[in-house]
Image (cartoon, rainbow, N blue to C red):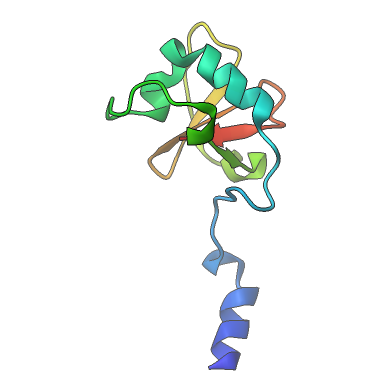
Length: 102
């Protein structure tokens, strides 16, 4: 049992590709920008249209490294860079230092 755990823990393909919350960068600035630009990015972060405009507490920080291979999404009228990551919308600041998702 312990050997299986050690094997899975050391296998990079078995590890999650999204780093949320603990260990990811802070995202207060990008969260503010997302809320400011909600009209432009809302359909990316809430594709089902449910929930309306979020509060800052509704956004979760995501490691910018997590979106490295994600599919980019076009955003008109915003400096944010947004991506489709495993069916979830993620937006990052223009410098890719901070990212957040709903």
